[in-house]
Image 1 (spheres, one colour):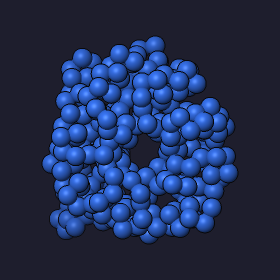
Image 2: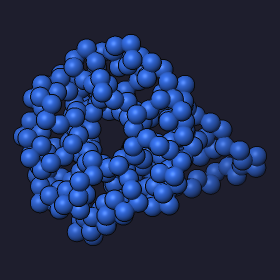
Image 3: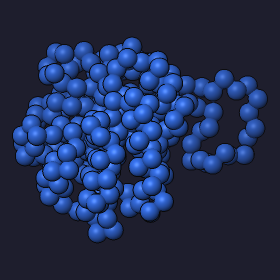
Image 4: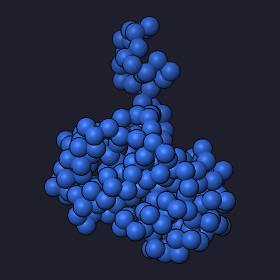
Length: 246
């Protein structure tokens, strides 16, 4: 495959839109608005029933950093097993030590639990202390892919590191560029040798609610709770056509 377009979704509706737009793979999560957390098992089951492209499931027990408690690690291991049993193509995981290194002992247990599934290291990579050291460790652990913005806020800003990672990986692992990726900046990323792209292709839709109780937020006061975000088939299609032209 010359290029890979992975769309990050957090609903069945978005999964269907992404597939209709030509996405080659999905990353399924919940709560994209806070960077993504583990989706429920019924959600995973529904998406797997509705689409016929590979689905990788993001597993992250909470918002925030990637230094996990023993309870959170137990939950993650159980979620990996459940995803495998449901028939997901892969899982998207990551964990760090307090010193900013990969939590190799725990990630090794995760790889054992994944048992042959496609495994992506998520953007915990972007918060690790030493990216090239982490790259070699991830390869040694048997991961298939690293999702990264090049340790910057966006992949466009992270191009210098992304280019080096692609060169150092030398085909041993997929480098998947994510964060702020769009049809507008895919060419700039592709010029640096990046072949795998990850974005959510979001559009904003009004809630169907007619009666709206003002001044009573349900937990996220910084966001408009009567707006919803879904993947746009048209944005996915635009990205896919662009990649086909490169």
